[in-house]
Amino acid sequence: MHNVIDQSGLLAISTRLQRLSDQLRKDGQKIYELYGVAFEPKWFPVIYTLYQKPILSVVEIANEIGYTHPSTISLLKELEKQKLIRSKRDKTDERKRLLVLTEKGNMLVEQMKPVWNTMVKSLTTLTDTSNNIMKAIEEVEEEMEKQSFYQRAQLIKRKE
Amino acid sequence: MHNVIDQSGLLAISTRLQRLSDQLRKDGQKIYELYGVAFEPKWFPVIYTLYQKPILSVVEIANEIGYTHPSTISLLKELEKQKLIRSKRDKTDERKRLLVLTEKGNMLVEQMKPVWNTMVKSLTTLTDTSNNIMKAIEEVEEEMEKQSFYQRAQLIKRKE
DNA sequence: CAAAACTACGTAGTTAACTACATATATGCA
DNA sequence: TGCATATATGTAGTTAACTACGTAGTTTTG
Image (cartoon, rainbow over all chains, first blue to last red; front, top):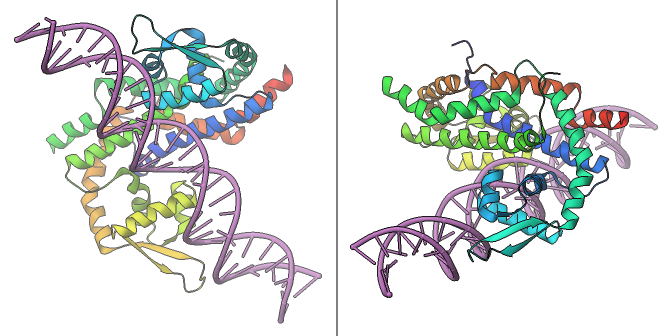
């Protein structure tokens, strides 16, 4: 085992992950401003998902973007108020509300493309380091699927 | 440039960082329960910091743990209510409030040590992947210090 | 075919961070 | 030496996620 995390590393990991995430989000907001477009980073997951899969229900979107459905609902409300998306009942299943991008939403996506492109480039240079963070996240997610942080701790405790 | 992030990667990064951080925190909580100790993950940064540097002011703690001082104050209130820390005015500078661990706090740290040890081991196996996440975070933080996500985007835009 | 279980959506309340502002004390300099 | 600036702490209000719970339709099953 060559990579050892000490206790101050333990201190760091969760808060640093969160701060990094915050920082990226804030800078994202400033980049939209730089391009003079009225768009907030938090809108991205829903808009981009609906751009790729044009008709989805509330829970389907929640799963795609990885939020809980109540969080998703409040995002959807905001986007409907902005008239970027609209919804209609599913005729074959009256429980479902189906979301689509509006014309305004689609136009915004087209406007956003160069901005996203710039972000992708910027983020790529930022994360082009010897330990690639995206890959690291994927790898940790895979490891957690095999065995969670908690399960590993359980086993270690049992051996004590 | 070998590591390229596409737009769905862009979608992923901020939310995935945050989810990973959440997941670790939740599992941390369960690990404390496993050991039967009354301790919450969010207390760790303050307690551990005061364990290493026994007397600190509010802002000093905030800087050490990387939170804003209002967030830190509310954490400190909680810890004072738990009687894990206590505070006194600095006699040479009446503006300052100096925090220290109580006897209860110190005893808790001793109790916590084996738990933290298990966590460190567990986390080490979890993150012992080819792209090490702690190193990746450090590297990205370094890159951001050289030039932020926003600054990089500015330069890319200028060249368009 | 009615009751039970499940699914989809929605609301309410909580949490843990933040920013912006307010107050008190300390310091530096004209 | 007293006014301007800086520092330390504190409060209020906001935000964006969450969990828990409720309701209304749908499906399954005894």
